[in-house]
Each structure stands twice: as structure tokens, then as C-alpha cells.
Image 1 (spheres, rainbow, N blue to C red):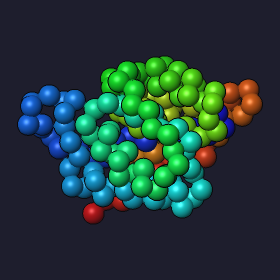
Image 2: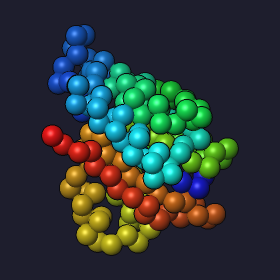
Image 3: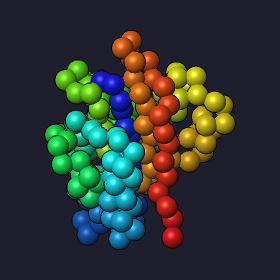
Image 4: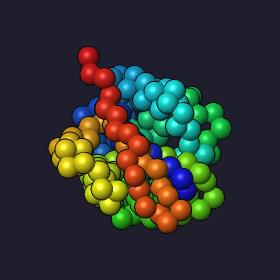
Length: 164
């Protein structure tokens, strides 16, 4: 893996028809955010080869919106990404990255945010940037890292959705 993109699902509705968190869908704002972040990432040249997507409704919808910008990405639904901690997210990405240059993980907090902070620390990012990621990784946010041949990360971008 040469690049890792961590994408938190877009803004979700507060409740689902079933009452289950797993079934929560994107709010209208989340639909727009998800399409916009996909287009922005693609415009900057970030094009995933593989997308690892949590099986929850809101992550599936997030990827459906973002994927329009990445027509050649292979999609893999990974049930274990729902409620995954940072270590589980990283392990899934590293496994997928054995056969892919760029991996995007579409998932949930706190696991994605914790992994983003860990990678920033490992990559010796500026303290201000680490604190920013610790304080804020909202729905629709994306963190991008370059991964060197030894598996060491370096910061390549932190993106927050535009808010109305």
C-alpha cells in the first residue's frame, strides 16, 4: 500500500426505522457531503484501488455517493469495520494494501479518528495538526496518508466537509 485514505461516513440521521444504530441512513446533508468529498479527493488525484466499506447503512450510502468519483475502485464490504477499533481498521487496510496501491476505508468513529491520530504521531506530524485531528474528525472527514516501503506513514491531507 502506498496511500491510505480514512473516510468517516457522512452525516447520518439520528434514528433508523428499525431503531438500530446499524440501520441509520445518511441525512440529506450527509448525501451531499459524501459526494463532495469523493469529488474533492478525486480532483486532488487520490484514486483508491480498493475500498473497504463497513456494512452499516450509512457507510454503504457514503461510499455509493463517493464512488461515483472512483469508477475503477474495487469495493469490499467488511462487516468487521462496524465498531472496529484503530488496530482492526489498520489491519484490514494493511491486508488489502498487499495487492493495492491506494486503499480507502469508509468507516466510523472512534476507530477512524484514533487511527488517524496514531498515524499522524507515527509520521511525526506537527503537534498542531495532531491536536486538530484529536479534537475534530466529524462525519464526512477524510485523512490521507502516504505509506513508505517500510510501512511508515506521512501526512498527505486532512479534509473536513463544507458546512452550510
